[in-house]
Image 1 (cartoon, rainbow, N blue to C red):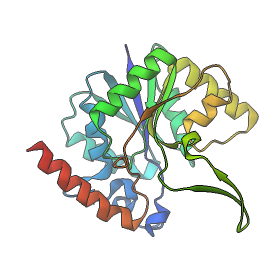
Image 2: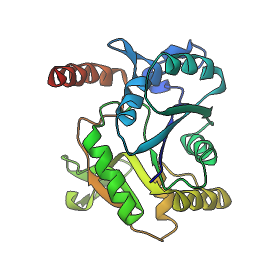
Image 3: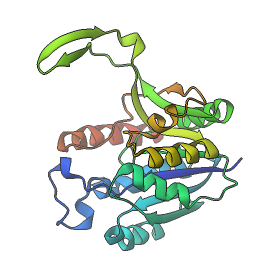
Length: 238
């Protein structure tokens, strides 16, 4: 089975309080966490999974040289290559998808800034997608969720019917390719890959239990939590 991973890493990281005019390493996915860029820590997690064949990183043109140098300095043990990212996550993933061999069986998409995904979860979501065609990682919210209009509550939504979507999100190659083609034809933009696949109404997307440690580092405060998780991860590995 041929499994490819696409990691969109073309974001500008504006929620980190850094603008596009600053140096490349200032983008959130390139920030250094205990000696290694967050992107590299994320790649390492997928490179450690035997089932994964290749890893494709979608980055902005101006970032490609820096990313190539960082990747060259690592020994990932499998193919890690770069494609040009787009102005949106969807466009970046589509570029990565277009670069894959047609004989690819499964495609996993993972946020560049989720470096604490664990190998067991990656393997579980790949296995689920291999069986069902589409699977994502998600967690049940612990807070009560309200539907509002402006600042007025309209409904309390039962938590047992809700999931907070994480990544990786894994799909059969043909299914994901069709979903992106349909989205482009319809002018539809989704917030994740599952939302594109759901529109096809061909398969039910399964959810594999994730973890509240699988955080997406998007705000300055997330870095402090990331340092704590990394310290715990390092200590557990000793």
